Amino acid sequence: MEDRNVAKDADSRQDDALVRAFQGGEQKAFDALVKRHQGRIINLCFRMLGDLDEANDFAQETFIKAFNGLGRFRLDASFSTWLYRIAVNTCKNRLTSLAYRFRKKTLPIVEENPMETNSEPLHLEDSNPLPLKCMEDKERAARIQKAISSLSPDQRSVVILRDIEGLSYEEIAAIVRQNQGTVKSRLSRARQALKERLRPILI
Amino acid sequence: MNACLEIRERLSEYLDGALDSEEVSGIESHLASCSACREELSSLRAVCEVLGTLKSVDSPPDFLNRLRERMTSRSFFKRVTRWLFFPLKIKLPLEFVTAAAVGVLLFFILTPQQAMKPVTAPFPKGVSEKARKASVPARTKEIRETVRVGADTPGGILPDTSDKTESLLEIVLEIRTGSVLYRKASEKEAIKTEQQQVRQTPRADLAKPLEAAPPFAEEKAAPAPEIKKDAKDDAADKATHLFQGQESVKARVIGRIVQIGGEVIGSSEEREEKVLICRIPKDAFGRLRESLESLGDRVSFSKEPLQTTADPVEVRVRIVFLE
Image: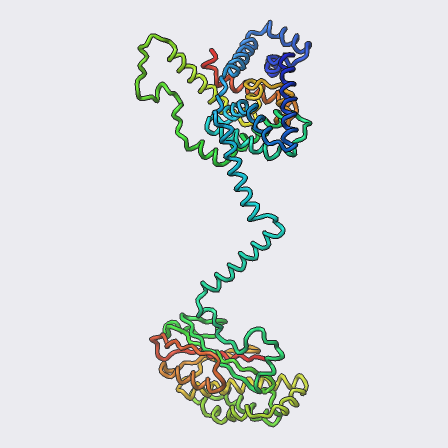
């Protein structure tokens, strides 16, 4: 844990240096910041929105907002916390937008049960267990994502930041701008809800 | 059971190692004796583990390039927006004024020319009241004619005519009083007599006393200085003169109606307006119109033909007295 914190501090210092360079007029520093954080931001957006294309789209939106606001960013919080906050808010806005809710209502649910909806019978005569394993993993991942997507945007963001991104209560509280007590109770409720929804695959 | 609920609420934090040692020992002693809570804990732990095993999605290799493209196009859009709208202080009012000007222009382009012409426009707008008075001759009479389609009985003036006529014709006669109606005292008696005769005479005989009234041209010829002098009379006298002058005009109109073979079937009056409802032969409408025109200068005139099959027709003559 200590090593992790040390690495985090080093990362944070590098971020700060790049931010200062950008604020000093070096535009290339922003590219470096994007490269350093794009993976985590895309992953966060994907878990929040449940769609890879949208995740890429809204991760870009996050970086554009960051680019526009970075000149005014003061280094009293870490850059990654600030960036996560922009990403979470961007995704939450998307989740609560009319366009998203309308789209969600009209989308046919083809992934309800892939085994049943697939009209082509599966031919798994190959004794190699890998394809089956691979398919099972995919199905499992899809079920988990569906369970995450069933949570409210607030619960979703907290559980993703904690259990997928591995952030501390303190960092999460700073990102979602709530006190730690609120974060803890949201997380507890989110886990309870997920436990119910994932019961079939947990056993 | 309550203990279990309390414990379960803290299990999430217990899993994260976010509790102090006292709380941890309390939870652990409960777990040792409660299998349901142990199961709950293991389920929650499984959830956390499952979430932790989710693979991260790969970021597309062209993510940065696409981001740069998007930012470039966004900045172009931003530049255009800035050029169009900023600085707000100057451009918004300008845009508003332009939009308003375009709106006014469109209104004038799209409005039919006919609709824009005023029915009566004795003086162009913008001429001051003083200038208007100066240019008004001693006596000005204006005749305005409008044709209204459909039964119309404002203020209950008209009897029900719906079964007899299809349309109501209206002639509006506007008399500019000026000071001309304040006639000399010597004329008072003549007017008074004329007025009484009009009121007492049965409809069919209306023509006779009216023909005896002095010709309108004579009144017109009255010299202006004399009028000015009369205008200095006291207010009550003025009012009487005005009333008598109005009655005189009304009597003349009745006379014209009877002359062309019509009859007056109803009337109403207010301070500045007298209304006569008359029934005239259909083919006499044109003659009545000409006859009333001769009372003064025609200002505007509808050339629409008489659109009715009824005969006789009912015509409403409104005599409006203007200051």
